[in-house]
Length: 374
Image (cartoon, one colour):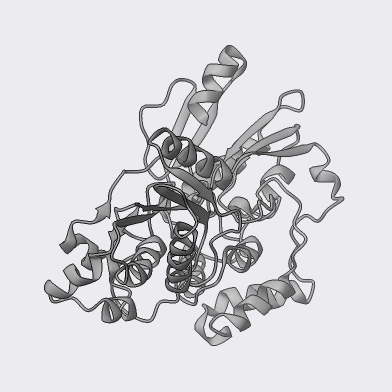
């Protein structure tokens, strides 16, 4: 997105900052910071503070251009006053392990941050125009990247409700709970709300999302001779449950298809961490789907992939499975049920050679699932 902006704006672009998990060579006048994902790191905080400084220094007769894609909640992080980056990391970790969806997760993020929930745009004295690629099911602009340029309708009380639901207050860092309680008492400034005059100069537009990825996959599948069925309903919920359900829906669609079939879905699932292994939501979804596909006698293959090329804390985008995945795992001495219980899908797919490694794509519109049935 940043490189396209340089090409489109030319000499009108006076400077810029790119915060990304991996940086290629950037054209002038852009500068870059390597942020961390799915948990913020030192680069994330550096990038967030530099972004706030850039926004605050904007001349009133200029315009701030903000380009967002999924993952920015972690990549660009500035703790609220009185909190440390480690407090944010620990709080985010509890929510991720507890299976919180992106709406719950980002409700908390917006209330322990100095940049999210509209605060980036509020810091800018100039007009602010934001273009967004969505990785959030429903495309709610106030939750994509935790809405740094969008008014926030959630409250400190909402954030505490999320914490009580996912893990409980004792599981979170004490400074985070103290900060949220102070906010509920009115001792901390709330995030900018709809109608806040500081955001009157801010415009935010959606320019792409999961349906664009689905249409791209459908075009390629059609060119290969497949009959294409796109499931509009988003893939959400527990990854291992969603994988089994998607596989059953793909099998059902095959019964009425007049030829080779491609079933395409997309969305974002969650994982409740109960073990100590490595993996990601796409790998868990794929393994759960494989357990259903194992019952078929006809050729079938499926994949679940993160469009950013990153699935959880791994170097894989996801995994590919077929009707033989479960039997091959068993022959390798791996129990799929035990692997799922330990959240160790990466190890299983690594042994089978069925991890999909694309490297970071430079964008993020959620997860994509594809089933091919003969």
